[in-house]
Structure formats: structure tokens, C-alpha cells
Image 1 (cartoon, helix red, strand yellow):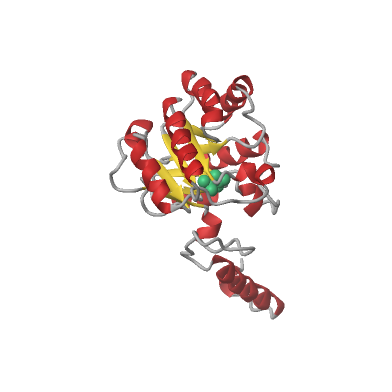
Image 2 (cartoon, helix red, strand yellow):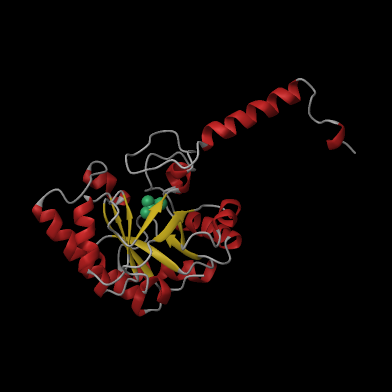
Length: 260
Ligand code: KIV
């Protein structure tokens, strides 16, 4: 199982693999097969049908993180801090402490760069491991007026590099780079010593993360360009469900072997 030390040592080595999970059932399938599991607040969209991640709460995240920890006992687990729960150092410390006290998560994830560095430092100074997240930050969707790929303009590139350095200096052990032009994500990765995990950020990062329901074809609403579907889950479940419905209706199920 990965630790903070071995994750940090993975910089520029074989890419790290992270996937999201939201429950014990799927977490137990992913256990030991990936390096890290992220209990992402993306669950609010893929599992709760909300339009964005902003209405996820601390209680929701802790409930799902506990479930994932129960299912994946041998994998490094990160709990996403939901919107509005780390607005200042004191609030962040109170809420992130809940993650450690109430779930078995090994770290928390926080969106934001330079402007959040003091908050990240308050957590790392108090023995809470923090994964950073810069670039396209889903919790900024309403204030930025949409999901915007970053790193197209010179001043954006400069800010992204400054953000990455600030997050590293604040003590984060790893950094998610989301929705960033590939060459820029590579430059960011080269400019810091902690590993970077990309999503929609090309192949030049130290690892990759995908939302599991996107990767396995269960989220059918839309398919972003950066997602590769490794399974047509929605169709397979539908086919199986149709077969079940059909067999019940025709009294084919339960058969003799399913009967006491
Ligand atoms: O919430 C989430 O799943 C995330 C990943 C997309 C990195 O933050």
C-alpha cells in the first residue's frame, strides 16, 4: 500500500494511478489495484444528479469516505473537502480534523493555488496530509461561469506555475492538475518536486486520475474529451436488467436451482 513517503518518491517514476470511488462495493474492486482512491465531490454529480459539486457537504463526504475505507483497506484514500468547508484556516482545520477522526482517510484534497496556501499550511502544520488541486477547479464553476480549460494565455501559465509552487511550499504531498493544456501541465510538473496527477492534462504528469463512473461508462449525460471509456457499463447493466425483467415476467426466474 502506498504511503505519503512512497507517493512523494514516485515523482518522475512509473505513473501513479488514481481513481474515484464513492462506496464500499466498488472500492473493494479497486482495492490494491490502484495507487490511490479519491472520494471526489464529483459524487454529487454522478451519484446525486446535481448540476455541479457545490452542494456536497462535510457529512456527505464523510459518509462516503467511511464506506470507501471499509471497502478498500489496502489503498491510500483521499477525501475531497467540499465547497465552503475550508474558507479559512480555522474552518478548514475543524472540518479536515473530522475527516481523520470520523473516517480512515489518509489525506484530504483542497482546490486552489496561492490564495489557499495559508489554509493548506495550517492543515499540514497540524499533521493533516493535503493533496492540492489546480487548473480547472470544479468548485469554481459558478464564479468562473463554466468549466474552463486553463493554460492558453501567458498570464494563466504564469499563475498556474506560481500556484503549484505555493501549494508545494505549503506542504502538500501531491497535486492534481485538471483541465490544463498538456505542455503547460508538463511544465508545471517539471517545476515542482511533488508528484502531479493529471485529469484532462495530457500525459506529462506523474500520474492520472479518472472518475470511475466516467471511465466505466456509467455516466451517460456527457463525455468530456479527456475521458476514455474502458467499459460500456450503462449498456451492460441495461442489458442485464432487461433480461431480469423479462425472466420474471415470463416466470423463467426463479428456476428450480434458485428455489428451496
Ligand atoms: O471530485 C473529483 O472527482 C475530483 C477529480 C476529478 C480530480 O476532484
